[in-house]
Image 1 (cartoon, one colour):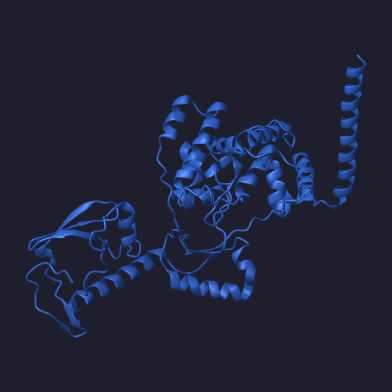
Image 2 (cartoon, rainbow, N blue to C red):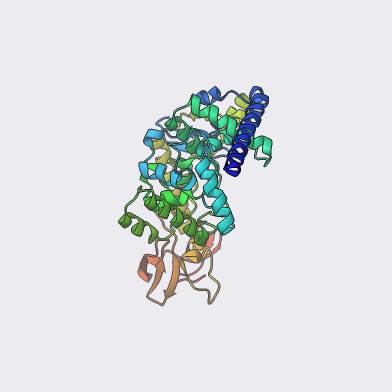
Amino acid sequence: MSLLRFLGWSVLTGLCAGLLAASALYLYLSPRLPDVEQLRDVKLQTPLRIYSRDDQLIAEYGEKRRTPVQIEDVPRHVVEAFLAAEDARFYEHFGIDPIGLARAAVQLISTGSIQSGGSTITMQVAKNFFLSQARTFTRKFNEIFLALKIEQELTKPEILELYLNKIYLGNRSYGIEAAANVYYGKSVTDLSIAEAAMIAGLPKAPSRYNPIINPKRAKIRRDWILGRMKDLGYISEAQWADATQTPVTARYHGTQPDLAAPYVAEMARQQLRQVLGDDLYTAGYKAWITVDSRLQRAARKAVRQGLLAYSRRHGWLGAAGRLPEGQPLDDDTLQTLLRNYPPLGGLEPVVITSMDDQQAQGINRQRKSMILPFEQMKWAWPRIDVDNQGPAPKSLPTS
């Protein structure tokens, strides 16, 4: 009995000592902590966007790609994918999660790695908005105390919205809307369960789990998150099976302007830079210029048609590029060959795969085959110089 009493008093003494130490540390660090009320009026770094007079996007300038979204516009399965990956007890804890910390410790001991981190989403908000990335005990305690204060100041949806708009997700994308655009060329509202799980795997290590660079590793991480979503009741067995069988389809999507007018956009950028300085690229400015999209498209079409007519009058310059002999024409090679040749004035670049004296067979970037009859190629008189053409071709031109 005396041994049990001794153990009981030892545990109680340890708890009291730990509580006193934590209280003293809080009293010491608290005056130095930033005011979390700033999060109610936070200004996220977003790029400059230039539009035509009728609201067509012409250009985007800035180091970070970010389009903030409101939490009510984020699909439920996207939120649940991040909860499964980062903080399944988000709605139950008060900023820190002792159970999550214990689970992370068990994972580290049993597997040598941590799949679900010990930091809660609230702690990550504290770190991302207020603290450095330095791995020190002081920073960790600051992170914990800030998380407790954030939970007192903000609602759970408000914390989630800050987190999902702030996190870095690779390829210059910050926030889930930018990541959906970069990896899948779509809005976050259109992401499938598999796509949401893929993006939710990125905060842990954006480079390591980048689905463009490391698709196999990214799929392993995605499928682990899908398994967690199933175990937590977020998705059904059938949804899990379907999502895990989905191939990795992520690829890089750059900013896609609605209207091509790069020169006038650059003129506008230079003038704005003189007035607004470096804040131009980070403060989320939007500028509208006098270009009318209908007239701009008509002007570009006229210029393209004029250049095409000029080219046909002065002779064919030959193939734009060549595939090394013996190299297979797989999807990656095809996309690489055609990447620098966008559709132009109604014309589409193709790779010629075979030819004879009557026709050529080609394939476009969607791998659709097409036939080019020789009768339709008689305009391709070979160019000699700016004023002279060679004789009319008697077979399909090859150079």
